[in-house]
Structures are given as C-alpha cells and as structure tokens.
Length: 193
Image (cartoon, rainbow, N blue to C red; front, side, top):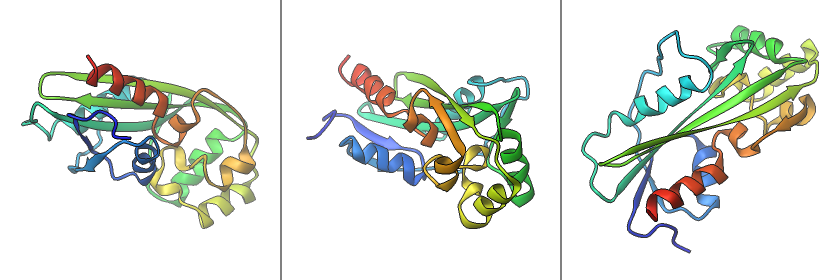
C-alpha cells in the first residue's frame, strides 16, 4: 500500500530506529541529511528545545519542490528541569543514568514537517519511571550497550529498559525516538488537506 502518493517524503535523520518506524507503517521515503550543530538558546525549556532543533534541522533544505516534504525529528530527555542530550563519554553516561535512577523523567520528541509553502511542528511527551539502578547495573549497561547515541544515555528497547523501567505513561515509540501514531495523523492531515 502506497501511502500519500503525490508527496515525496524525505527523512532528514540517520537514526535507524526512525527509519524502521517509517518502513513499518508502509511509508516510501528518501533519506537526506545535513550536518547541523545542535545548539539551542539556554532560556528554552522542555518541549521548546526539540521544537527549536527540528526547525534548525530543516533550515538546510531551502529550495523544496512543491511535492517535497521534509521530516525532521529530535528527542530529548527532560529531568529535574534539565535537558539531557547524548552523553559525550562514559563518565557523562554514568552521571545521566544516576540522575534518572529511581525517578520519573520525560522523553519529548518533536517532529517537523517542512514543505515549500509551510512548516508544521508537533511534539509528544512520555513519562518514564526508572527503578533505583545499582552501580553494577549502570556500569554493565554502559559497557555492553549503546548509550552514546541516545538522549539521556539509554535506549528503552535495550537491556536497561527491560530491567530498569517500572512503568511508562504515553507513547512507547515516542521514547524510542518517533511518536508514530501522531506522525501518521499529521501526515494524513497535511497530505489530504
């Protein structure tokens, strides 16, 4: 089933998880990315941060054809009034996981839909409750898994999500990196309007 014929969808993300989600819902898309320095003004809070970053990621695509639609996405972890991005090293990953241990945090993903004549940005927030993680569990995760390409230093689909998360409220796919149901609903609204 070809969804949205007549619209050429371009995903501006190298994330294998985002690419897989779009394939899973039967979307035909190309991948085109530009290096963007993901820096945001310090006064921004919570959802304002990924909202800003998805607009920034769309900026290198100025000359869109009328049938092209660029999808940009950005996920942050918001914990204790702080934005946790991707950790730079083991020490930072350990500090982030220590901060999340035994507490609730928000995972916020913003998605931008940019066309030649308009831009729409949506965001979704999910609450994640971690059990208290032992130092051994945190060290094991950092040594054996991939904390460095993920906001907040963890992937819910990996080992730490299985052993460490007591409950979630909201969209699961949003925590992985793309709120799929909301993306699909927005595409239907844009492409059928």
